[in-house]
Length: 267
Image (tube, rainbow, N blue to C red; front, top):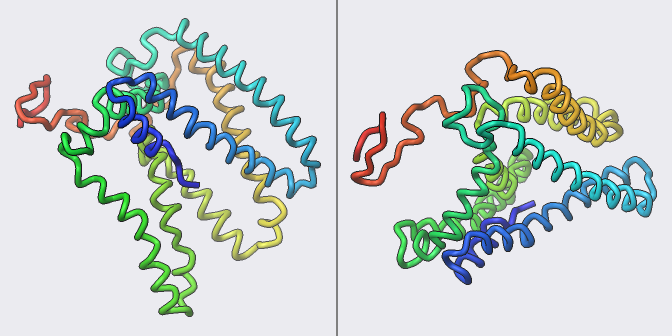
Protein backbone atom coordinates (compact mmCIF):
# COMPACT_ATOMS: atom_id res chain seq x y z
CA UNK A 1 0.00 0.00 0.00
CA UNK A 2 1.33 3.47 -0.80
CA UNK A 3 2.01 5.62 2.23
CA UNK A 4 0.50 9.05 2.74
CA UNK A 5 3.22 10.35 5.03
CA UNK A 6 4.87 12.66 2.47
CA UNK A 7 1.51 13.97 1.24
CA UNK A 8 0.32 14.76 4.79
CA UNK A 9 3.62 16.50 5.59
CA UNK A 10 3.44 18.47 2.35
CA UNK A 11 -0.15 19.63 2.96
CA UNK A 12 0.27 20.70 6.58
CA UNK A 13 3.69 22.20 5.79
CA UNK A 14 2.05 24.63 3.37
CA UNK A 15 -0.85 25.35 5.74
CA UNK A 16 1.24 25.85 8.92
CA UNK A 17 4.88 26.62 8.02
CA UNK A 18 7.31 26.84 10.93
CA UNK A 19 5.25 24.59 13.25
CA UNK A 20 6.95 21.19 13.68
CA UNK A 21 4.54 19.87 16.32
CA UNK A 22 1.52 20.64 14.16
CA UNK A 23 3.27 18.91 11.28
CA UNK A 24 3.98 15.66 13.13
CA UNK A 25 0.52 15.68 14.74
CA UNK A 26 -1.20 16.02 11.36
CA UNK A 27 1.13 13.35 9.93
CA UNK A 28 0.28 10.99 12.78
CA UNK A 29 -3.48 11.33 12.37
CA UNK A 30 -3.35 11.35 8.58
CA UNK A 31 -0.80 8.62 7.96
CA UNK A 32 -0.34 6.44 11.05
CA UNK A 33 -4.10 5.88 11.41
CA UNK A 34 -4.24 4.71 7.79
CA UNK A 35 -1.29 2.39 8.33
CA UNK A 36 -2.89 0.87 11.43
CA UNK A 37 -6.15 0.34 9.54
CA UNK A 38 -4.32 -1.48 6.74
CA UNK A 39 -2.51 -3.58 9.35
CA UNK A 40 -5.86 -4.55 10.86
CA UNK A 41 -7.07 -5.55 7.40
CA UNK A 42 -4.00 -7.75 6.99
CA UNK A 43 -4.86 -9.43 10.32
CA UNK A 44 -8.41 -9.97 9.11
CA UNK A 45 -7.04 -11.62 5.98
CA UNK A 46 -4.97 -13.99 8.10
CA UNK A 47 -8.02 -14.68 10.28
CA UNK A 48 -10.09 -15.38 7.16
CA UNK A 49 -7.61 -18.03 6.03
CA UNK A 50 -7.63 -19.58 9.52
CA UNK A 51 -11.47 -19.62 9.66
CA UNK A 52 -11.64 -17.25 12.65
CA UNK A 53 -15.04 -15.48 13.04
CA UNK A 54 -14.76 -11.74 12.17
CA UNK A 55 -16.34 -10.60 15.46
CA UNK A 56 -13.85 -12.62 17.49
CA UNK A 57 -11.01 -11.28 15.36
CA UNK A 58 -12.10 -7.68 15.88
CA UNK A 59 -12.43 -8.18 19.65
CA UNK A 60 -8.90 -9.57 19.83
CA UNK A 61 -7.62 -6.65 17.78
CA UNK A 62 -9.34 -4.15 20.07
CA UNK A 63 -7.97 -5.74 23.25
CA UNK A 64 -4.53 -6.15 21.65
CA UNK A 65 -4.44 -2.49 20.64
CA UNK A 66 -5.21 -1.32 24.18
CA UNK A 67 -2.66 -3.68 25.76
CA UNK A 68 0.03 -2.94 23.15
CA UNK A 69 -0.40 0.84 23.41
CA UNK A 70 -0.03 0.67 27.19
CA UNK A 71 3.03 -1.57 26.97
CA UNK A 72 4.63 0.59 24.27
CA UNK A 73 4.14 3.75 26.30
CA UNK A 74 5.45 2.18 29.50
CA UNK A 75 8.45 0.64 27.73
CA UNK A 76 9.35 3.91 26.00
CA UNK A 77 9.11 5.84 29.29
CA UNK A 78 11.24 3.22 31.07
CA UNK A 79 13.93 3.22 28.38
CA UNK A 80 14.12 7.02 28.31
CA UNK A 81 14.62 7.03 32.08
CA UNK A 82 17.11 4.15 32.32
CA UNK A 83 19.28 4.16 29.14
CA UNK A 84 21.96 6.83 29.40
CA UNK A 85 22.41 8.97 26.26
CA UNK A 86 19.63 7.10 24.46
CA UNK A 87 19.04 8.33 20.88
CA UNK A 88 22.35 10.27 20.91
CA UNK A 89 24.71 8.30 18.64
CA UNK A 90 27.62 10.67 19.29
CA UNK A 91 27.68 9.65 22.98
CA UNK A 92 26.82 5.95 22.57
CA UNK A 93 29.39 3.14 22.15
CA UNK A 94 29.88 1.60 18.72
CA UNK A 95 27.30 -1.09 18.04
CA UNK A 96 24.80 0.26 20.55
CA UNK A 97 21.17 -0.59 19.65
CA UNK A 98 19.84 2.62 21.20
CA UNK A 99 20.55 5.00 18.32
CA UNK A 100 16.81 5.34 17.49
CA UNK A 101 17.11 5.50 13.67
CA UNK A 102 13.33 5.53 13.13
CA UNK A 103 12.83 8.35 15.63
CA UNK A 104 15.64 10.31 13.98
CA UNK A 105 13.86 10.11 10.63
CA UNK A 106 10.61 11.29 12.27
CA UNK A 107 12.44 14.19 13.95
CA UNK A 108 14.24 15.18 10.75
CA UNK A 109 10.91 15.15 8.92
CA UNK A 110 9.45 17.58 11.46
CA UNK A 111 12.37 19.96 10.78
CA UNK A 112 12.26 19.65 6.99
CA UNK A 113 8.49 19.80 6.56
CA UNK A 114 7.59 21.76 9.71
CA UNK A 115 10.30 24.26 10.64
CA UNK A 116 11.78 24.89 7.19
CA UNK A 117 8.45 24.10 5.45
CA UNK A 118 8.04 22.71 1.91
CA UNK A 119 7.87 26.14 0.27
CA UNK A 120 11.48 26.84 1.27
CA UNK A 121 12.53 23.32 0.29
CA UNK A 122 10.46 22.30 -2.73
CA UNK A 123 8.52 25.48 -3.53
CA UNK A 124 9.39 28.75 -5.26
CA UNK A 125 11.71 29.74 -2.38
CA UNK A 126 13.65 26.47 -2.31
CA UNK A 127 16.52 24.81 -4.13
CA UNK A 128 14.76 21.50 -4.79
CA UNK A 129 11.78 22.53 -6.92
CA UNK A 130 12.70 19.98 -9.60
CA UNK A 131 12.09 17.18 -7.08
CA UNK A 132 8.36 17.75 -7.61
CA UNK A 133 8.68 16.17 -11.04
CA UNK A 134 9.10 12.82 -9.34
CA UNK A 135 5.39 12.91 -8.46
CA UNK A 136 4.82 12.79 -12.22
CA UNK A 137 7.44 10.04 -12.57
CA UNK A 138 5.65 7.97 -9.95
CA UNK A 139 2.32 8.36 -11.74
CA UNK A 140 3.75 7.39 -15.14
CA UNK A 141 6.13 4.63 -13.96
CA UNK A 142 3.61 1.74 -14.31
CA UNK A 143 2.66 2.74 -17.88
CA UNK A 144 5.80 1.40 -19.69
CA UNK A 145 5.50 -1.93 -17.85
CA UNK A 146 1.82 -2.18 -18.81
CA UNK A 147 2.58 -1.37 -22.46
CA UNK A 148 5.39 -3.94 -22.58
CA UNK A 149 3.15 -6.62 -21.06
CA UNK A 150 0.53 -5.90 -23.74
CA UNK A 151 3.15 -5.87 -26.49
CA UNK A 152 4.78 -9.13 -25.34
CA UNK A 153 2.01 -11.27 -23.77
CA UNK A 154 4.27 -14.34 -23.78
CA UNK A 155 6.74 -12.64 -21.41
CA UNK A 156 5.01 -13.62 -18.17
CA UNK A 157 7.75 -12.12 -16.02
CA UNK A 158 6.73 -8.63 -17.16
CA UNK A 159 3.42 -9.01 -15.34
CA UNK A 160 5.32 -9.70 -12.12
CA UNK A 161 6.87 -6.21 -12.13
CA UNK A 162 4.85 -3.91 -9.87
CA UNK A 163 6.24 -0.38 -9.91
CA UNK A 164 4.14 0.94 -6.97
CA UNK A 165 5.50 -1.86 -4.77
CA UNK A 166 9.07 -1.29 -5.96
CA UNK A 167 8.90 2.47 -5.38
CA UNK A 168 6.96 2.40 -2.09
CA UNK A 169 9.17 -0.33 -0.58
CA UNK A 170 12.15 2.01 -0.71
CA UNK A 171 10.26 4.36 1.63
CA UNK A 172 11.02 1.99 4.51
CA UNK A 173 14.77 2.16 3.95
CA UNK A 174 15.77 5.55 5.47
CA UNK A 175 15.57 4.34 9.12
CA UNK A 176 17.61 1.23 8.26
CA UNK A 177 20.49 0.28 6.00
CA UNK A 178 20.86 -2.11 3.09
CA UNK A 179 22.39 -4.72 5.42
CA UNK A 180 19.06 -4.95 7.25
CA UNK A 181 17.30 -6.13 4.11
CA UNK A 182 19.44 -9.19 3.34
CA UNK A 183 17.39 -11.64 5.40
CA UNK A 184 14.14 -9.96 4.33
CA UNK A 185 15.01 -10.43 0.67
CA UNK A 186 16.27 -13.98 1.19
CA UNK A 187 13.11 -15.16 2.95
CA UNK A 188 10.93 -13.38 0.41
CA UNK A 189 12.63 -15.03 -2.57
CA UNK A 190 12.56 -18.50 -1.00
CA UNK A 191 8.93 -18.55 0.12
CA UNK A 192 7.25 -16.18 -2.34
CA UNK A 193 9.05 -17.46 -5.44
CA UNK A 194 10.68 -20.87 -5.02
CA UNK A 195 8.16 -22.42 -2.61
CA UNK A 196 5.23 -20.74 -4.37
CA UNK A 197 6.21 -22.26 -7.72
CA UNK A 198 7.23 -25.74 -6.53
CA UNK A 199 5.04 -26.37 -3.47
CA UNK A 200 1.96 -24.26 -4.08
CA UNK A 201 -0.23 -26.39 -1.80
CA UNK A 202 2.10 -25.86 1.17
CA UNK A 203 2.36 -22.16 0.33
CA UNK A 204 -1.43 -21.71 0.23
CA UNK A 205 -1.90 -23.52 3.53
CA UNK A 206 1.00 -22.25 5.63
CA UNK A 207 2.51 -19.07 4.16
CA UNK A 208 0.33 -16.57 6.05
CA UNK A 209 0.87 -18.48 9.27
CA UNK A 210 4.62 -18.49 8.56
CA UNK A 211 4.53 -14.70 8.14
CA UNK A 212 2.79 -14.25 11.49
CA UNK A 213 5.24 -16.68 13.11
CA UNK A 214 8.25 -14.77 11.79
CA UNK A 215 6.86 -11.49 13.16
CA UNK A 216 6.17 -13.08 16.55
CA UNK A 217 9.61 -14.72 16.54
CA UNK A 218 11.36 -11.40 15.94
CA UNK A 219 9.44 -9.77 18.79
CA UNK A 220 10.19 -12.69 21.13
CA UNK A 221 13.90 -12.77 20.26
CA UNK A 222 14.18 -8.98 20.63
CA UNK A 223 12.75 -9.24 24.15
CA UNK A 224 14.92 -12.24 25.04
CA UNK A 225 18.06 -10.60 23.63
CA UNK A 226 17.48 -7.44 25.63
CA UNK A 227 16.91 -9.12 29.00
CA UNK A 228 19.72 -11.66 28.51
CA UNK A 229 22.41 -9.56 26.78
CA UNK A 230 21.73 -5.90 26.07
CA UNK A 231 20.67 -5.06 29.63
CA UNK A 232 24.24 -6.12 30.58
CA UNK A 233 25.77 -3.89 27.86
CA UNK A 234 26.46 -6.86 25.57
CA UNK A 235 25.42 -5.54 22.17
CA UNK A 236 26.38 -8.54 20.06
CA UNK A 237 29.23 -9.97 18.01
CA UNK A 238 31.50 -7.27 16.62
CA UNK A 239 31.31 -7.62 12.85
CA UNK A 240 31.08 -5.42 9.75
CA UNK A 241 27.27 -5.38 9.59
CA UNK A 242 26.66 -4.47 13.23
CA UNK A 243 27.17 -0.67 13.18
CA UNK A 244 24.17 1.22 11.83
CA UNK A 245 26.15 3.43 9.49
CA UNK A 246 27.10 3.60 5.84
CA UNK A 247 30.71 2.54 6.47
CA UNK A 248 31.64 5.84 4.88
CA UNK A 249 33.16 8.48 7.21
CA UNK A 250 32.13 11.28 4.84
CA UNK A 251 28.46 10.23 4.57
CA UNK A 252 27.41 12.56 7.39
CA UNK A 253 29.46 15.54 6.19
CA UNK A 254 27.58 18.66 5.00
CA UNK A 255 27.73 19.61 1.32
CA UNK A 256 26.64 23.24 1.68
CA UNK A 257 29.39 25.70 0.67
CA UNK A 258 31.54 27.09 3.49
CA UNK A 259 30.24 24.85 6.31
CA UNK A 260 33.11 23.66 8.53
CA UNK A 261 32.78 20.40 10.45
CA UNK A 262 35.71 18.51 12.09
CA UNK A 263 37.13 15.73 9.87
CA UNK A 264 35.00 16.82 6.90
CA UNK A 265 36.01 18.60 3.68
CA UNK A 266 34.83 22.16 3.07
CA UNK A 267 33.14 22.75 -0.29
